[in-house]
Length: 232
Image 1 (cartoon, rainbow, N blue to C red):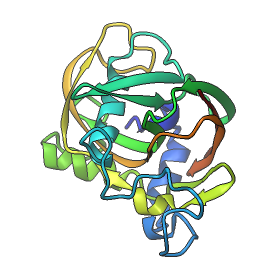
Image 2: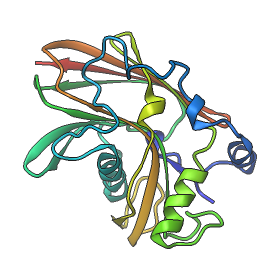
Image 3: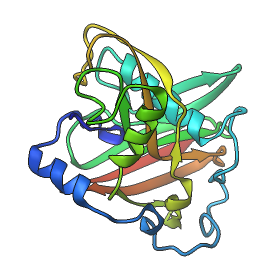
Image 4: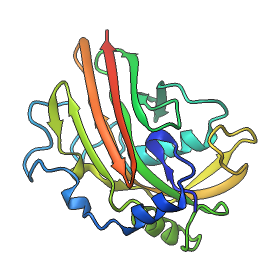
């Protein structure tokens, strides 16, 4: 089974890590130890779990980010733009497969909403990418959720913590198209996928410099990622 954790496009985990990930029983309800209060103290830019950007909620943007990953023909740029219904949404993602520490700098216009990629898992109809689950839409959704158990995420915006545990979401099953030269090891051709995990929808920032700092872990894999966003 090739686990594809989106934040770093991790396409292959060792058998030891796979066992660790699947054997970890940490509840998603414990992912953030910030209590059951507001999403964030002093971070009004975070769209609530039931909120929408450009007419769509978290599940849709999780799907869109994975479709962008599947269709990529070269290493991803960290600062991109997605369009929905004529609306432009900033898309902050990573360029590398490697775990560890990374710092990315992006520029966005004031008021533009953003989707910031978080740690998420997908399962697809491609061979070796759905573990012991089937390939129906419902089975792909069950697979993506099951293989995400044990994920941990700690995020802050401009120093204020965000309760990302309340933002965990599942996408619908969706069509994907993989080019011949995928930099992430995907099988070329058409398929279907479903995803489960984190992401941040943000309303537009005020002019100035803002920082999104996040730490992810699943099994033995860990990441420490910082996005610095210059808003003009």
